[in-house]
Image 1 (tube, rainbow, N blue to C red):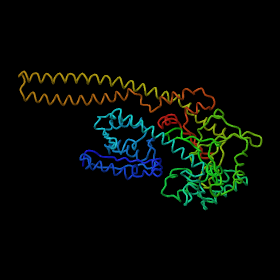
Image 2 (image 1 turned 90 degrees about the horizontal axis):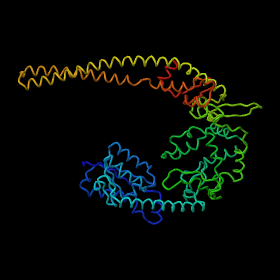
Image 3 (image 1 turned 90 degrees about the vertical axis):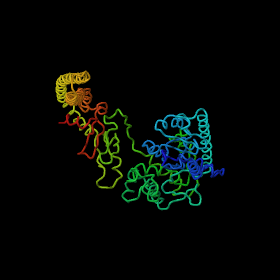
Image 4 (image 1 turned 180 degrees about the horizontal axis):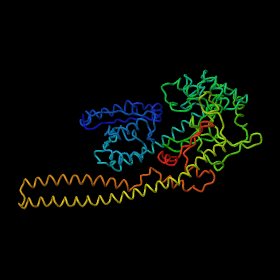
Length: 539
């Protein structure tokens, strides 16, 4: 095997695929063509032909974004030292962002000792000794960047035209619908899931609340949209790690009731990218979205859809709570599911009622799930405040312990310094004796046997002294730093609030990570201190 371990990288974007179909360019850009080109190049190079090879290809990923699964696997192998040579058809297959591509060629790959070869560009990093090969490479990548932006605009324009014709160009089809097998850009009704969608709309029209609808669906044992998708498409990983698999909740029901596609409309341009090559997108206002009606059979009528929307308008009036209104802002979590427990401020029978509740508890049906009990804000505040006061009271005693430890450490340091000074003098004396032994032997005043005996004794003595000095120096440096596992910092933080008389956001933010509520009798506070600090404060 040769000294190079080769990573062959191949990429085909969705835009390339669309243009291939449109302009009959399949052979020039296809995955198979790129693989054959790279393999022929390797086979024709004696230095590379016998080398170990790995293959990586990304199908349907843009070159302007370097977050591609196979590309990231290639980088991982490079970082682990498993690959030291990367070969591509041309620079554009590796990436179309010339700034980031230049960074790989000029800085990252040379640092990692990776050879980079771009076949059609006649580029081999070995020929340039760590540079990108001058102006030609930079200008070529600027052209790639321009081409990528131009291609992106063309693709966006083509997509917008399809939207206006009412063609469905989205990836994931809404629950209850499916792709028409005879026309990929049309939708059809999925009878099994559509029955559940219709039941949801009927319940909403009858005035049932969203949380009650979710609970009804869970009690009937209906699969969630995520679970249904997994059963229908086991090969796909879309909902593999999501809480939406577990049960119906407020959000999953709300999404269905807000979906215009259920009455036969096709909705496009819901989101748009913030720039070429960016994976991030922003929501588009309703008035700017493209909505074309009567493009596929509906599960419900438009009139039924409009009636169901009243569920979002007829909400009980609530007072808007600002972050300054309650001390435990963003700190209260359900101890069972880990979700945030929203703060509610309501007027019930003419009296104010402030409380926390787990939203998941209202829709689940299992007996050992989240607690359905509300916990009053004043009760939870009292629990937290009493715990904080206990820590504040304990802080003074811990301060004295830390002072005593520091005093003992200082005394030990003084003893260590004295011992260290004596050992260093002994070492200097030993070194002088060793030099004298050599001088006497060289002058002929010491015979060979005596010289060798003394040298052995002095060497053993020097080794022992070096070992003792190293051991004491290590102890000294350990003692120099106060080994308090964060105690000093914790005490300083607690000291800031020593005069506090009530719970507020400042003290909660400084001391508490989160408050876990399991039920009315079981509340756990997670502090921003290490276990060692808490043992001292609570001991």
